[in-house]
Length: 326
Image (tube, rainbow, N blue to C red; front, side, top):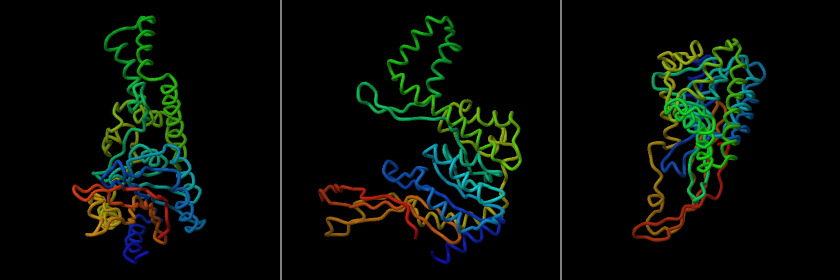
């Protein structure tokens, strides 16, 4: 680890009076190849960092930036952190969406700057329809359909509703609907369990307000929730405005993350090959887990092969992707 990185994280620990873990999933373009999701493979880096903190850690602050991913990941990660400290806080670095919002729900305090966002946690999945076309299914779309025909159109007679429901199952297999419904129930359960981990108990009514808004009442999975809206939908005292000193320290560290993840630099395979090269191995860092003492990168190893020179046509083969200590 470079001394610069260590100094930056030590500064964060100083201004937050806390041990700090940084978890950022990259979104370098092209996103269909390089966007990185929250996944269970982060458990080992987190475990190694938490072991290094020792048994008398008072507070851990997770600096988090992600667009989400696997909904099975937040529960074991938050539990592991809480096993190793008395107080657990989250600082949202730009955004913690979907599974990232679930991770934030387990924190005693959620630090959000004026530019930070959470999101709904309603489930979605991809499926292939009868014509072989891949589509995205969100549970709120199906609920919205039923709500539309009952409350907007005014159809309440049971036989008519049954016929319209049949039309829905012609579009989407009943098993697909059942699967998404189970995921919806799972997310509500995980969210409730995470909220109940707090040192200061959250009132049951406030828990239900938060969960209902995040799973049902915001209507769009891509809706971004800033700190003002978060307070309105039940988070209240959970949301903390960072101090100027805390935000300034985070700004310095963000510059270093930009350098590592190259978020503003699209990956162009043809630019990687030097003149005369027809083949090259490259490494792209797509995520980080940092502490003051340890660094882990999620690295993808690609083999670039020139198929055609003009116009450039390059085959990009992913040979392996894994977390590595650096």
